[in-house]
Length: 312
Length: 306
Image (cartoon, rainbow over all chains, first blue to last red):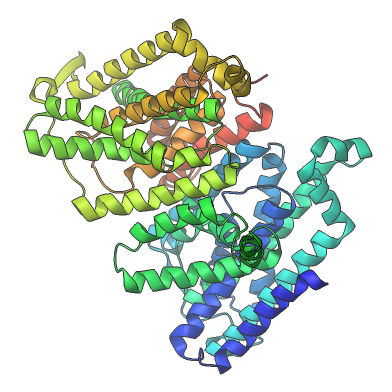
């Protein structure tokens, strides 16, 4: 329970943010973007940190969720109680289909095969010319909640994202603490021993991968609604790399690290784009390298590292 | 689809395969010997092309540009190794992926800053411009044939070095069991550096050769890098022979798929739908091939480590 306080603290700060000076439009948009990527990052942290499965194709799960919104929108279906379950099922379904093959491999090969599946999703998205192809698709309105335009209000959307983030964190937290999660973590440490005890890690890993995929679909649903626009760039391998970076920037020590990492990433990106201008990646790239080299525990591990320094 | 078109596409596919092999060779050795995932290997290819463009504009000669670009690419590779990569050898793959991803972001933006976002053109050398008739009524550019020949010669040379020299023996031993090689008294760090610099130069060489026929632009290495990873994973990590066979395979599948798939699809559906699905399927073909091969042989076609 003690380990949960940082996450609860972050969620509480996010809940208070609109009322303590972060309530204007642009800031709310940025915060909701941060929380959406927080959902994606937490779901990725579940498989990277929990199961030791480093996926370089997680953006595809978001893409499936986002394109579910687009495809249903084009078909005239904009009701949340239909769109949301479909988006989650799309992410989970893609994870199941690709996971069946990908989980058979391990280590570097897993990184590469998830990258390959991500690329397949990318090229599929780019070829959907009915939905804009390379140029993307603009949604004319956000998904409706029981016939009302509830999501159009920025403050409402902020709390929807916050609720989804809290739910995602809770689900992943409970999964990791359960018997299922223990097997997952044990298999990450030593696959052979887990097999010797009598578990088959394959099914556990696949189930974890599918859960992460479904949560990725949820993030994709929110992302499509936040930007009111969906493009194949959402599924690019660079986006998957950024998601991994959020997880590592935050630190793998706990799930709250992923939330921190996503928020820090979004705000850093925004700040650099303003402060440096067009060539902000020139600064961002080296920062990324430095954070990997020196920030080993991530942002979440920072207090611990500082305490260690002070003690010498 | 006529026989001549098939022949031309086959040659184009071989040529893509050769370029891929030059990139994948360095990647697979670095990966195999040092267990180091270098996402930034693709920017070495891009840098080779940009260096060729810069030197060609400066000296006015493709050959001088080639002569200057190769050592420059080598020097830049060693600089990157010394600055960044050296500190990542002992880290997990995740850290390596991320740090080298940072290098990509930096360098892609860097060339945009230096040379602008617009594609650059590199003039073709006079000696190799023009075409040659390879079949009645079919002319094929000499330069593309030259790439094919140079690439094959480089591959043969590489094979000779890796299979027949002492250095090559150390590299192969390192790919199989690096700690054991170090324990036998070989300075593994220096071996790493040599392999790394050599791999960077090969990728740069591929970039120089591709510069006159492709547009030189920021991010041009990213797509090829992904293809090169597919190549080394299919071929088996650390295996030069595997990289060669897989590179040719991927080059052919990619090129022939793009021209044949839409026609093939037309057998099942109407023209516009066929063009669309055909293009999408063609882009996916190599990934499907990779997934299929990994599903059957999780360590690739020619695994080095038993």
